[in-house]
Image 1: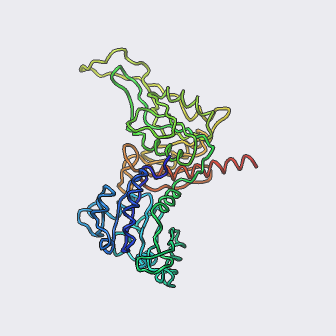
Image 2 (image 1 turned 60 degrees about the horizontal axis):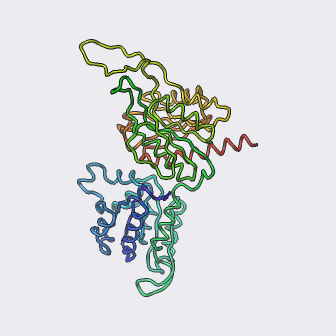
Image 3 (image 1 turned 90 degrees about the horizontal axis):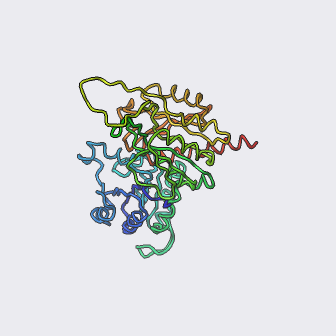
Amino acid sequence: MNRLENKRILLGITGSIAAYKSADLVRRLRDTGAEVQVVMTRAATDFITPLTMQALSGKAVHVNLLDVDEEARMGHISLARWADVIVVAPASANFIARLAHGVADDLLSTLCLASNVPITVAPAMNHQMWVNAATQQNTSILKQRGIHIWGPGEGDQACGETGPGRMLEPAQLIAMISGMFQPKTLTGVRVLVSAGPTQEDIDPVRFLSNRSSGKMGFAIARAAAEADATVTLVCGPVSLPAIEHVNHVNVRTAGQMYEQIQSHAQHHDIFISAAAVADYRPVQIAGQKIKKDDNMINLQLEPTPDILAGVTKLARRPFVVGFAAETEHLEANAKAKLKNKSLDMIAANQVGQTARGVTSGFENDENELTVFWQNGSIKLPLAPKDRLGRELIAVIAERYYAKNRTQDS
């Protein structure tokens, strides 16, 4: 699986002659399947035009901090939240200095301050500027803050001199960006994921279901595959494309999902129950379409099989991660489910509008999770579901190995 497929790369371009390399970098990134949005400083536009970068990225290029149309949507914040990683290439000495000292006087520097994703800079400048004590001190500050400094390379420079200060080549940067995503933390681990809704028939044309799109479960399965796990995805009816290198098992009803999960779980090391399975189903399914008239009808429902309880009772049970979609009392309800169902972990999310007025959960491209385990928890803030899936897999991998170490000792 290509590690950059569907990844969101925000590329910052600053004022340097090396900006011409950024055009090739964008083209190569898109060839890997990544989405790219370009942000340019004013000085960068003197070296390469926004129109060129727009043609290569397929998206509008952002230059102005206070763009009236964008700021109506808080553009600098939405861009910061959109990105999976920010890459500044080339990064001039001036930009490095401003970033080191928290100056936010243009769109790119503001985005870097407003973002909580990894940031990397690829310096490009005259070799004397690079070795200058001020530049070295500024890069040291950035490294201490966890910002990656890639390069510079050494060789002939545009000014005719030779020394360190060349921006790394696009192929080198592509390899380094790829390495930022989901290292092979689950090599040799078998992961079973459930996703999507179920449909419980009322009659031949009607059924009970819910608003799950399956996007969160698919993001988790994709992230597990990126982490080099062997992944099986049991999914209800969804309108999402299949994930490369993931074994898909399609079902409709809660009963079918129960049977498939029971069959596969004992052969897997981790089970992540992200599906929104119906809790109830009609006791009787009408053989013919129920005709509408003026009378009320009573629909008698019975509980569906408890998938999590079935898995935790297996003789060879996997590491089990449940999900709790709550409209109120999120922490109390999630912790009760964690205990009552004997789970190893549970990921809880607030369905509907959060306290900040942000809509998350079902039918959205963003979500936020609070993950609980015995004597611990972690908050994963609002983010695109693909990024959230990677963050969750990282937490699951850490807890999975921690449990195995405890059992082996």
